[in-house]
Structures are given as C-alpha cells and as structure tokens.
Length: 116
Image (tube, rainbow, N blue to C red):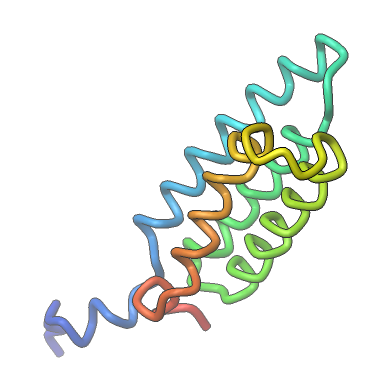
C-alpha cells in the first residue's frame, strides 16, 4: 500500500519543527544556565532548559504531555520571574517573553495537531 503525503497526512504529524525550536531554546537555556550557576547565579535556567529538552522529546513523539510540560514551564517561569524582579515589566520581559510566545503558539489548533 502506498501512503500519500497529502494535506491529510501532514495534519496528523507531530509538531516536529516546533519541537526542534523548543529544543534549541532548551539547549541554550541549559548551557547558559550552567555557566550562570557556576558563577553563583540562579539554577532556574538549568532546570528550565532541561525541562524544555524533555518537553521536546515528548512533542517530537507526538505526546500531548509535552504540551502540558511546556505549560508548566511557562507558568513556573512567570512565578519565578515575579518572585525575582516583582512586577517591573522591563525586567520581566527578558525572563518570560520567549517562553510565553512558545506557550501561546502551542495553544493554536494547528500547533497541537498530531498530539495524542
């Protein structure tokens, strides 16, 4: 049986391009977080980076749990950022913007197609 690569099959595929983007962000956060931790800074970036890598693996496999994990990371990032800098928008933005955008993108129907 020959399988066609038409639009119907593409819709059922896991969001692999998105997962690859999350992997890049996670690897950068983990690597930068290790350097920061070695200088005596926060371990948050290491934890968030590793959690994003785990979310990437789940998303790559088409598992809905990857989306839930990403949601927890975004919520945790907001909580940590507010705890660290308060409600100062200029200080919050670099801490939460990228992960919030990734989380919002995953809320769209076309980003969640293919997740089981």
